[in-house]
Structure formats: C-alpha cells, structure tokens
Image 1 (cartoon, one colour):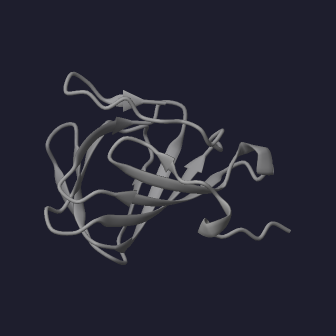
Image 2 (cartoon, rainbow, N blue to C red):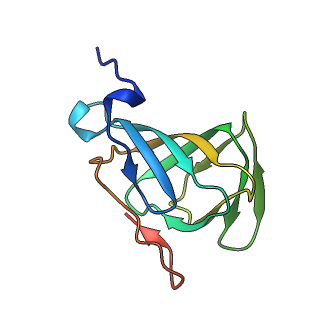
Length: 124
C-alpha cells in the first residue's frame, strides 16, 4: 500500500505552476497522480505526445482551449480528458489560481518540466 501526501513530495515547477507528483513511474502503478496548481493569469500551450491525461478541477477556474479554438470553461467539479494526445491551451483565470487533480497514463518519471515558448506546444 502506498500512502503519500503533498507534504511528502517536493513540488515540481513545470512552467506556469507547480505539480505535486504523488504517484510516479517508480511506484509501479502504471499511472501518475498529481496535484497541479496553475498560476492565475497564465496561459500554457501544452501537448502530451507520450501520455494521456485527465484533469479534475478542485478549485479556482480556467479554460481549456483546443488547437482549433474550441473553448471549454473549467470550474470545480469538472473533468477534462486529453484522450487523443490533444494539443491545447490551459488558461487560468486572471483572479485566482487554478487547482487540478491530474492523472497521466502511462506514468510520468516525475521530473518532467515544460518548455513554454510562444512558438509551439510544450511536449513530453
């Protein structure tokens, strides 16, 4: 059995926020669970080419914008799943941090960080 809290792990600075990676590849579960904070006012161009990701909003608000421009408002109690390695923009509201529980499959190593730049989607 694995029992771990956010106090037990050092958060990873991923670019526009932090990620407490509670389960990683070394735990042998086949998936990763993270507590993710997206800083207010930030926009991140992201794509996971080796992982599928699902996120459940537990606080704050924001949007996920598909590469084609389709916008989805995300508020507490909403889940979104990137089931086709979707390139997307993750946008936190201007007035509050955006808090998510993120699940990745297959599992992350745990040290991955995004390279956020205006010329493309950060990938890992």
